[in-house]
Amino acid sequence: MMEKYQDINNRLINYYEDIHDKKNLKKHLIIRDILKNEACFFKMSIDEAFSILKDLKIANVKQEYQQLISPSNYQFLKKKGLL
Image (tube, rainbow, N blue to C red):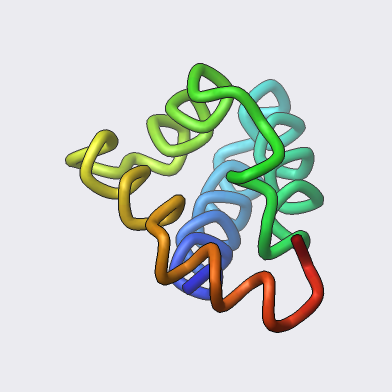
């Protein structure tokens, strides 16, 4: 599931590099490091999660967040030993 967000973030990193927007580039490099942890949305506050999703230009932040922290995703990550 995280691949979708990692892909979006990588495209934004490339974009901000191309237009030399250092502020947003720095922010998205930090987000890239955060998204390396598949369980990251379970380990942060809802405000932090919403902020990241907004920075990724996700249209329906609440719906996406609910999918990320769904019971099925929790069980999946737990079986992988990430939670």
